[in-house]
Image (cartoon, rainbow, N blue to C red):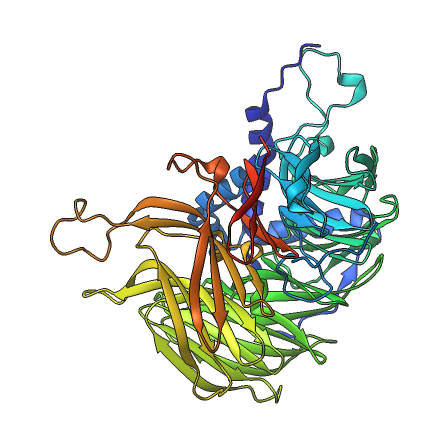
Length: 617
C-alpha cells in the first residue's frame, strides 16, 4: 500500500485557527468577582454556542489580541514540543505523597527492573540476585515513553505519539489519505497495560488511546489517573474529547464537561481520566473547559489542577485558577474552583493538609519586571482563601518549595539564596519565622526527617555589575530546620564547575534517598574548567568541559554532614556517550543498581565494588 500524507499541510490547516486559541488557553481571564459555580453542558449545540459566543467576545478584546501577537512564538514552541520467596528490601520511586505513585522511566518490584529507553523500548531485567542479572524480555511500544507504573503483575506504560494520523479502514487503500478532522489531531497519548506474571513473555491486556497531549498522571491502588490537554476547535469545528478502548472509539458527553462562566476565551479541554488497570474498559473520563493545565498535585482523595489566568490590572499572567477534582476509584467529580495571585512553579508548590489546600506562587509584573512571592491557604472544600502571605522576597522568584505538615519552606533567588521558613499552624495567619541567606540556590528540597532538609541546586557567585549572580557547580546542602526562626546550613558540597548538571534539578524522580541508610545517590554530569582554557583569572561566567558522567554516591547525616563515598559510571574509554549516561539509581537489599539506556550495573552498597552488569542495547 502506497500512502502519501501531506502532514505539514494538514498540521497547518489544523493550527491556522486553533493555534491562535491555543495561546488563549493560558489567557483564561479573571476579574475580582467571586468565582461562579461549575456547570456542565446539556448538549453539543449548547457547548458549541457557548464557545462561539466567548470567542467572538474575545476577538474584539485588544488586550487578548496583543498578547496573542506577543506570545506567537510560544504557541509555535508548544505545538512543536507536543512532539515466590519474600520480596527483598528495595527502593521505590521518589514521590511527593505516600501511597500516590508517580510515573517514571525506571521501576522495580524488588526482583525485576523495568527500564524504559529513549528509543521506545522497555527492558525487563532480572536484577535479584545481582550475580544472576540478565534481560528477560523487551517490549517495543513504538513511541516516546512518558513513564511506567508497576503493580499486581501488571506493567502500565504511558506512551506519547506526536503527529499521528489515524487512518479510517475504508481510506486505507487510497494513494492520498486525508482523514476527517475529528480523526486528525497531532497528539496521541496511550495507556498500555501488560500482564507480567510471566516476565519472559509480557502480554498486552488492554490499551486506552487518548487524542490529546499528556500533562501528568498518578496511580493509587489499581487505578491510573491521567490528566491531558485537548483543543476545542479545529478549522472552526467544535470538537469533543475522544478516546479509544481496545480500538473502539468513544466521545465525551457534554454532560461530562465542566465549565465556568468566568472563562473568556475557551480553547482547551483538560481531560481527567480514571482507568481500572485490571480491566481498562472500566474507566471514567471527565473534562473541564479551560486553558492548558500548568501543574497538578494529587492527595489520596483529591486531584488539584492549576491554570494560568490573565490579570487585567497589568496585562499578564497574574493569577492562577485551581480546580479540585474529587477522586475515589473510578469516581471523578469536579467539586470546587478557586483563584490565587501569581503562578505555581511545580507540584511541590502545592499541598493538602488537615482540610486545607496550600500553594506558593511567584507574581511577575510584565510592565516593570517586578516579582514577588506569595503563600496561600484555602479551604479544601470550597477553595476559598482563608490565609495568605503576599509580597515576600521582592525582586526574586521561587526556585523550590516544600510543604511539611504545618511548615512551608521556600527558596527564592536572584543574587543570593534565601531559605524562608513559614509557620502554617494557624491557617488564617501564616507567618514567616526565619530566612537564611547563602550563596547559590536550591532547585529541589527533600525532607530528612522533621528537622533537616536536603537542598540540591547550584552554587553561585554574585555579579560585580548587575543585580544577578553567575551559577557555578552543582551544590548539595543540608539544612537544620529544627529552629524555625534560625534555619542553618550545617553542611554542603559542591561538585564541578559551571556547566555541571543533574536531572534531579528538573526531575525529582532521578533522586535516590534513604534516610535509614543515610544514602543519597544523584546522577551527575560533571564539568571542569581547565587553566589552559582561561589563562589568568577565571571569569565567573566560564563554562567547564564535561569530564565525568555517572552516579555520585553520598553518605548524608546530621552528625557527619555530606560525604562523597564514590562514583559509578557506565562511560567507556572516557567518551561521554548519551546512551551510557546514568539516569536512575535504585537499591535491592545490599546492591546498588544504576541504569542508563545502554546498560544496568550492579555494585555493592558496602564498598561500591562492581558485582555484575547487563547490556540493554
